[in-house]
Amino acid sequence: MNDIAADIFLCSLADLDATGAKEISLDDAGVRLPAFVVRWNGRVVGYVNSCPHARLPLNWKADSFFDLGNTYLLCINHGAFFDVLTGACVRGPCKGQSLRRVAVRVDGDSVLTA
Image (cartoon, rainbow, N blue to C red):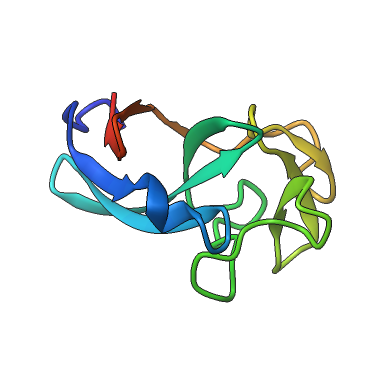
């Protein structure tokens, strides 16, 4: 995941208003990489959309990554809960593992790769 160029537009901050998250697709050295961006407690972070337990996407519905309390990221397939800001699995079958981070930054109203 080191070949993702910096300053690629991922989404606008307004795209995060409805659910707090936005699914995106990145190019990692010519390979399509499903990912997502979330805004939580004033911070914006990005992750590869793949649970470390079974390598399945976390979500089953578009742009839906949070648990019911909007406290954790949730893998709907296996019930794993992830810390929003670190990506660490805090409960479920992959406890001790983490989501793969995608470096992002905010520039005005845009979320870009960092």
